Length: 432
Image (cartoon, rainbow, N blue to C red; front, side):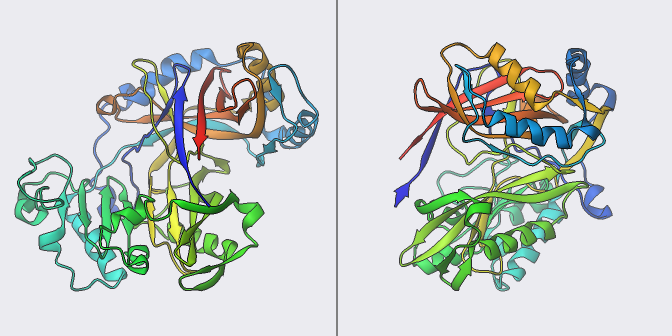
């Protein structure tokens, strides 16, 4: 058994960050409460595109004709090795048929006070907490009112009920007890625990520890879902296969938390960790979204280092914890309801995988010698690092390459922009 810690080091001007754009779609009542993005022609995404589109790379391939050529390129690369790159053990992601690919805009929205309260009320009923004292337990962490540090957590945070008529947004509402935990974001539920893990372990602490992974740190096995989905482990509810539990998790998020998936968004689970729960087990699923067949780049958490200036890649960071075959017991991460829409002119061509590798060989420093274990076309959220200035966030397609630098045995992740050929990368290591 092992406990896993991830530590990241940044080595370029574009680095890993924990972005959580506040956006949401849903029914008419919900979308009426969207925060205005201001002048659409001059929002953050439009400013980004002004300089970005001038950098488009000339040597690109037609997207609609590339699917079969991509397969051939992946086979060729398995026998490819230079002083800088080796793909002998690489797992290449699938390439779905596309007519064109666009830069996307992730649009920020906001929940009203009434909406947030109702979501929390409905969720408590759904998990069987009908007699829960919301007036006492629901608190606001948005900073709209000052905390009273003379009170113990969570009662040092302002009471929502006491300030209900004066609050401007419900984005920061939360509750945290031994029985359950819920944290609201601008697009619905950002983090929650129904208390099942805490209850099974007979812990007397806060249920938030379930959602934050503190009660699932002892990993007994981990890997790609497609490799482990046939395995069965004894969960608190009985024997459940990894595949069945993953299906339950996908259905949970596809149903909405509580708002439905944005247009074009699908739920994908690439990895799973089996963790110990005393004499039983649970599953921690890495969750990411796909937009029209293209997956978003994802991370499994860890430390963050930031640079001043430039802009940063923000990877999806979401983990769902399952201890039965019916539902998700806890999770933390972005919402699939975050609104995504094409912006700028759709592109019918991209830099091919083969050309991307050629650019890598040219741009990477001589001291880098990477065994690439994963490569795929991914969407990446980019940020200028100043959330207060960002009213809309651009999302760009990149070739993702992940592996180990043989010169220092550190992990290395590289992103090569599929439209411009620009390269961004960071290094990391896994501390056991």
